[in-house]
Length: 90
Length: 491
Image (cartoon, rainbow over all chains, first blue to last red; front, side, top):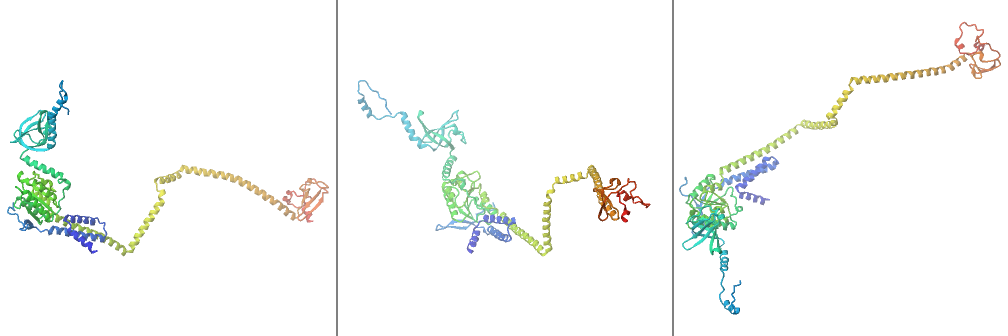
């Protein structure tokens, strides 16, 4: 009982922004149709709120990082902060 | 092949035959030419030849004859009119070109020549040749198949860029990208984008990005000359791009430049900034969209709750007021009754029926008809009256008769009891003396009993009661015809 819901939660976390939004749109449409029972409506609403929160988070959580891949002395690759030089205002 | 022999007179052909057989067998020109043709033509069915155009001769038919030469050699060439028409430029004397075609040996002239299918000017042509060959090989491997093109992620979690870290391209790209989606992470894989060996550095960069976790790879550089863009036509780079596990956007040079990298990538962008637009959506729009959906979600739930709440309220109101419930039931019952009555009336409801009914009423109330009816009734009554009259008459007559007949005996008996007598002769009443004769036997009926007697005398019949002194005679008795002397009885 716990296992599948955990997996679902994890799957949701893995979902891309657009997948989340597509699901959110479907939930909203279902709820707007007014054909659901009260319990179902509340469930759908909760799902929609969760999806909206996750989608927003996906838009927010991205931290602006521009990095440059560099090769280290022992041949590995490493990402270092990168600021394209000069001409930024051009 | 049989060789011609010239047998000589007086000699045996055998000796000469021996000698001839010892000689090497000569080829005919045709044989040799055919043999050369068979040896050469299959090997040079599709060749690219670079050289300078010389001896250009155009025929009226449209065919073009020329030579291709370089410092070492010269080869005749022909461009048939049908192919020549497809050429995008005019051939000129002294022009450096690359020609594609097949080698043909033409026995009647004893010459070989290049039958040209395509020609391109050299320089651009050399690159074009290489490009063409690369394209053909990639095509053959199915790497240019449109079905291979993958869609870009709607919002990439991280964008990989293979480009020069110092070029304008990366600056333009990042500026536009972060203008649309300010917080989008980017990983830049540095490479050289022009010059000798550039292609392999680009390929390494793309491979490195594929290993790093990015959702999309952008291969880009700014505009440049054909030579500067040449690395992006490299076949190995093309194959690295094709093998990339995530979608690749190629944005090399300006819009007019189409490189092999562009062809093999999933999406071709015209410029670095265009690539940024394709890769990143506008974040504000996404935020607004999520917010709008969230608001709709709230409204939708509120709507559901409102609907349920008002349902509940209505139900509760009914519960609270039994009269209401009753009234509703009564309404229902009424409805049902109405419907029942209506369905019972249904057969008469049609307008036709109604009309027929009205017509019947009208006919009944017609005065002429009424008069006729009354007359008929009157006549019937009169008839009956007549019948009644005659019938009554008869009945009354009969009744009188009957009464009378009943009356007579009663009177006789009464009269007899009062002392009158009846005289009967042979059963017949004797009311006049003339009815009997002397000596007749008569019976005299009395009030009680009878007497048989014999007529001894009789008169002529003038006075029924001789010797009678009473002033008022009993006319009735007299008229009764009884010839009985009442006094005689009293005596």
